[in-house]
Image 1 (cartoon, rainbow, N blue to C red):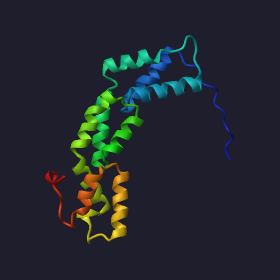
Image 2 (image 1 turned 45 degrees about the vertical axis):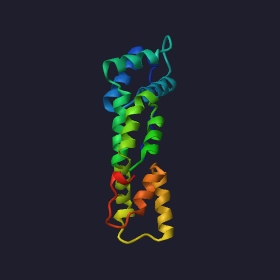
Image 3 (image 1 turned 120 degrees about the vertical axis):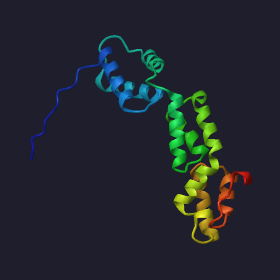
Image 4 (image 1 turned 180 degrees about the vertical axis):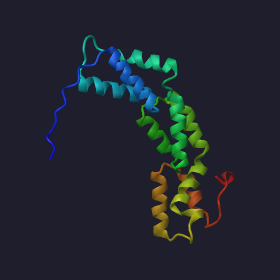
Length: 177
């Protein structure tokens, strides 16, 4: 059994160290201003601060101005990713809100989710093998479970009904919704 090694405590952060941490974080992860603020706040709390309190708002604004952080691009990317996985507009909006994306930056991504509602619902149905992708017509209980699953995935009720009303092999088109 190895003896337990204790690492010496790390020195408190200063503005240069905080800047390095922020650059590493935005270089490694696609992030938002809110996530970066949360990360930096946690690091300051964990390691302490040497000198005057940091101005995180100024640092984040500078990173946005330099293009290191783009909340709008992050929102569009996250929305597209969730829709490819079959999630609906409500789940997309919830994910963007949880990531700290403001309404202004999320507007395009939410519009994108509304426009692709049927396609996302069909991807979800295909993954779950329900609606038009089922092998046989669903009985009442299976249909209720499928309905509930699609609603939890964030799809609008009218889209869910249209997808689940489709017979196996009958793919609904957007004109009928």
